[in-house]
Length: 130
Image (cartoon, rainbow, N blue to C red; front, top):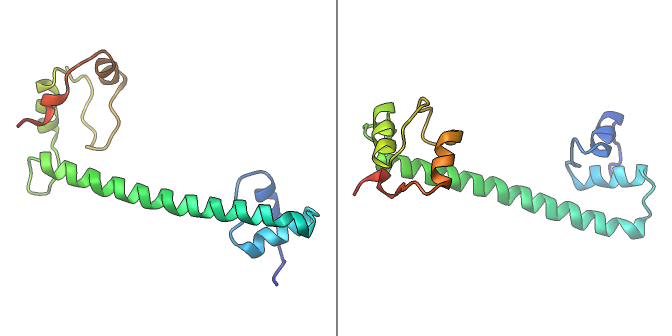
């Protein structure tokens, strides 16, 4: 079983900058930290949970990006399926927003003024028309 672990990798794992990349790497780190064999099972279980969570998070992010692309294509005013600056301004005005910042892109976060308006009950239901 490969138990070689560089000092730099061990340091990054110990300081929380990096997770062990494999079970061999985790095993080498646990050996270096003198964790008794009987206590290593819980470390391996935690590592597997973290790996599953990371995979799930990547899949969720991919699904969210795809859903956002689909939503943008629904409200788009161009053949490329993107919302232009002009269309964004029209939709925001229709919803009662006075745009004070330039439209960056469809998935960019709203600025603080727009967020305040939403929190104070601005009606955004008319943003996308009927």
